[in-house]
Image 1 (cartoon, one colour):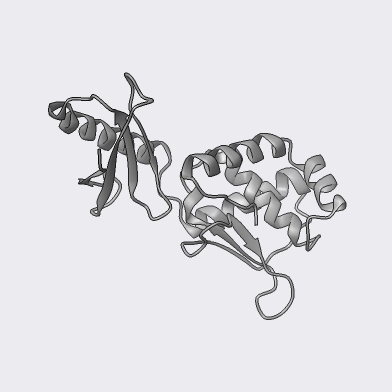
Image 2 (cartoon, rainbow, N blue to C red; image 1 turned 90 degrees about the horizontal axis):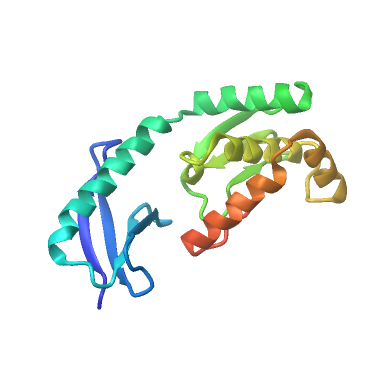
Length: 190
């Protein structure tokens, strides 16, 4: 059966969200949804779900989005800068310097990047895709990019120092791998 397309109101803004509804023979009772890289939602439902239940299911997705929006309120560049300062103090004793940190929307697979040298030395960019991820994963991405200001590549020294400083490296990397799998595209730490 071909995918169906719906539009719902994004509770976090005045925008409309595209929803792709896909019937899945592997699902028997529950439905699953997630964001696609383009910002739309993929809603997988049991193959035999009656049409009359779709409206209430879409309403449920809207309420879940609203709950997520309240749980993870809009995070601004100023919030990100404050969070980076906290990560720097807590895990690196405030020893890492950077020039600017901001959310960006143009990263397709990378979660963050840190520029070394040149006019943008010390500029850190974090993908907006992770704004609603758990704080400890965002902290990992920030710590990872801060560490790149000391080590330009993923050398053994880079990983040794990052693992010693941030206690949730492997847990966060596991989360990122799971999110990559769910999105159907690889995400890279940087």
